[in-house]
Length: 232
Ligand code: C5P
Image 1 (cartoon, protein in one colour):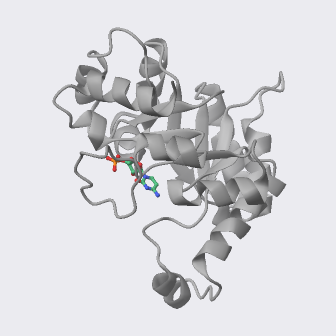
Image 2 (cartoon, rainbow, N blue to C red):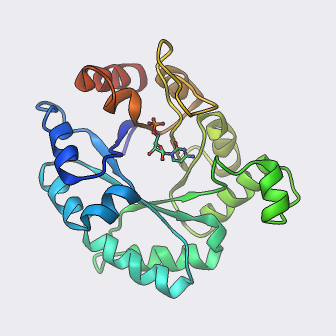
């Protein structure tokens, strides 16, 4: 898969999601379904969005013992999602088990990426709560390297980290980056942001964009603007 824009469908119900997706009569965007929508509507929401022709990033961030993650991943693989994720903190063994679970009998599987340290975790909380004393950027790169070692396809990271992840793990290791805002837009609660054009320059493979599209007066125009800045 090449560069693409993924819309974060952070809606609380199927009804609101479909009302939003109905606006896209031309190109069918790649969409991200997160915990809120999935827990509200269950796997049926994935099937229905898939049936409408969208690619799906199912953002459920699995983290459990290897056997449980393997079995859960096998269910997600059957749902025919295109991209899913887990926490690298679950260890290399858990990530290897996830790949096993995801792989279908014919050898195909959805792409699998890892969350390294959440962007809501800072140096202080990592040291005090998790008792990890190394610098956070070193920890993020180490987790990315572990994900690569386990056979994963990439990581979710800040666009500011994408270049370094590619330097550490190789150009083909995917960087999926939220925290994207238009140069003339509101940054809201995001702290470190980049424009789609900057994210492209720095080498992000996929940008995840929520409110700049979902809350726009004309979401289709905002999506097309992202595509033209990031992909074209
Ligand atoms: O609305 P906004 O563009 O900020 O949405 C970004 C999306 O990416 C949200 O679904 C958010 O949960 C997700 N995300 C993030 N930062 C991370 C990981 C995921 O903003 N580090």
